[in-house]
Each structure stands twice: as structure tokens, then as C-alpha cells.
Length: 543
Image (spheres, helix red, strand yellow):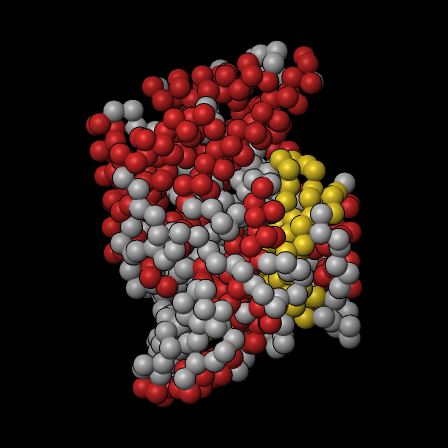
């Protein structure tokens, strides 16, 4: 995720602007009845998501829960940007089905205006012994589940033996009322800007660009912005559970998806079936603590990358005989780019901010380390094409120059979730701590704290509430070398969920996410839990 946003939490359908709240009432006749209805437990922390609401609100929700999505084969315009190809069938020939479901735009008014949510699924192989639907969220916030699930589905083929695999575009994302802000040309300039201002003039320029971005989001998507928070998406998942016909929610959340899953468990503890949280967000941290943790996490990942390079000796193309020297060469490259960008792709140069994004993108997985080494080596020689391509990938820009709404949705969701609004003076006071945490990424992550300061919608809380007394065991998997959601977050999540609920599993490895790393131990533990209900001992370590 781009450094110009509040966080680097990771990871397309696209709807035309103006359909952010289509079919203005799912059942018009319920609107008057529900005008004053309040869905139970709207305030996080009440734990009242299961206790009901007034009669008119309950009736509106029952009608929404009884809707029957019109499942159809995913067609090209609905499956990918620009009318590209639909998702390919799985190796056994099973095809993907796509549909929309309606949810209240505002859960305080369940019978009022609705928003369409894009959903995708592939059916379980063994329908006779089917457990239910396994709903995935792959992170972000802002990532399209409709795009991601077909890409990652081969990794979950074992789970498809008894689960329908399901994902969706959360509200504000992709085809689910996707937040729209700047146009293509404006985004090219926005993501190339200097996000580490060095003097008053650069600070004012940076603030001005953030303000322009926020105004554009309000102008283009103001109706949906107040309603894209994580709590609303958690409520959408419970509605989806009912629409899919499941008594319990079976869930696999990755990165931000773990925060979403934790909020769901807090609101609906008795509706949790089996749930896995992988690459875990620390739910106890503030926005500042989260960014500082990422600074440390990405610096650690860079150190591990540098150590690997040194270990390979002459096969390593980077300058330096120690990890520290390689890290310094990266810092020196970014400092040079701050003064003078280099050749990138076409007429787009590689700037310091884009280079930092590209480096971070490559640190998400050891599989990308070879591209990071190549990109750094080429950039040192004046060719920034590969690092710029990596940055584009993080920012949701395809090779044709089209952007998904990944970054717009990320900002919208983070800024409505997080109450904190930082000033320039506060950021400048925090810079020494961020620089100590990461000489390479610290400045960028610190200045990223300004992002929500211009946002037109106030934030809701300092951190999410995830305590879930009464919920069944939930697997919480932390990776020791995870750069984006540092390992310590798993322990914090397990503790916050509550005794007997959070079951901590450690993966000793690199990268963002354990199950998709291919580690046999992690997959064995997760598969046994999801397929057979076998709960591992808390504290299990893989490999």
C-alpha cells in the first residue's frame, strides 16, 4: 500500500460513478416503517449486534436477509477493469459465479436506501458433505475480493473440498459503491509527489495535495463516505451469511481482514463458526502506533533481505559487504531521488516516494526479493522502470495506466475508522522516533499520518473493538518476519479476543501471510481446523 496513505496494510471490478447507492430502496414499502429504526448494537462495544432492534428495523433486515442473489457466470465487464477476461475456471473446470446483494447504506435506517455489494463464489466439490460458505477478505482496506479470490483460489483448493469459496468487494471498494476521487492523470501526479517534505514550502505543497484529494473524494463519492467503515462491513458479512443460507459465519481474513473479522466477532460472537486470522493487525494500537510498527516491520524485512544478499556473496548485485552497508545504499538511493528523479516508464520518472513504495511492495514476500535486488541495481544505474512498476502495482495501476479504486477506498475506510487527526507540528515532533524505527521508511510513514487531517468525514474510534466473549476458538496466525502487520499483532489480537477465543499460532518465516507462503505445517494446522474442527494448542509454532 502506498506510503501516502495512513498505512501500508495490504494486499477488479469497477462500477461507473454514480451507482454508489443503487436501487434506492430494496423494498420501498419498508422505508416509512423504518424511518426511525436503529439496528441493535450500532455502537461498537455494546456487543448488541445479536440482540435485535425495534420491530420495523427487524422487518427490514428480515426482508434483506431473504433476498436471492441472481448468480450468473462472471462476464468480462463485471469481472475485470476495462472489460478484460473473466476469471478462469479452476483446473477441474468449475466456473466462477458472480452476483450482487443489497445491504442498508446506513444500518441506522435498515429500511432506507441500499447499496449493492458485489459477490463472487465457486462451489464446493463435495456438496453432500459441504460445511458452508468460507468468506474471504484479503486485506487493504480497499482490496477487491472479487478480483483476489480467483487469483489465490489454487492455494485454497483443499478447503474447497467442503466449502464454497466466497469473497466480495466491501462497501466503498470496486463494484460495491466504489469510492472515486481523482482521475487517471491526476493520480499519476499524486502518487509521484514528494511525500517527505523538507521545508515549509514542501510541507504546504504536500498539505495542499492532500486537501485536493479529500475534496475530490467528497465531490465524487460524498454520499457513501460516511458509511464505508469496518463496522458496517462486518454487518454486511452477517447479512451475507444469511443470504448465503449459513447458520454460522466461516471466515478467512488476511491482513486488514483480521481486523474486520475481529470486529465481526465482537458484534456477533455467537454467530462465529470457524474463523482464521492470518497476518494479524494489532487491534489495540492507535493509528500512530500502527504506522510506527510498520516502520519497524519494513525495516526488519529490509534487513532480512540484505542479510540474504550478503549471504549469497558475489551473486548479490548490490553494493556492500554487510547488511548495514546494503541498507545504507538503499537510503542513499532514496536521498538522491528526493533531489532528482530518474528515468522510469515512458514519460513517468521514478521519484523518491514511488521508489519507497516499490521497495515496500517487494518486501511483502520472499518471492519478490529477486525483483527488489534487480530493481535497486538498475535504479542505481539510472533505470527506475522496475521499481516504478512495483510501485504501480501497490497503487492499483495497471499496464494501461488505469487505476483501480484501491487507494481511494483505503483512505476512505481508514479515515472513517480512525479518530486521530494529526497536525504538521505533531508529525514533526514524532519524526525522530520514526527515523529511529526505520532510517529508510520512517519519514514516509510519519508524514503519512497527515492523510486523514483533511478528510471530510470524522473518524469513529482510536482502535477497533474486538473482544468476543462467547465466541468459539479463532485461529490467529502471526509471521515472525511480516513487514506490514508485525508479528506482535497476533499476540495482541489473541489476547483482545479473550481467553479461550484467540488461539495463537506462530509461523517462523518471512513475508505477509503464512498460509499462502506454502508452509506445510501452517496449512496442515489450518486445514485440520477449518475442515475437521481440530483446534490446535495455543502457542503452536510452525515449522
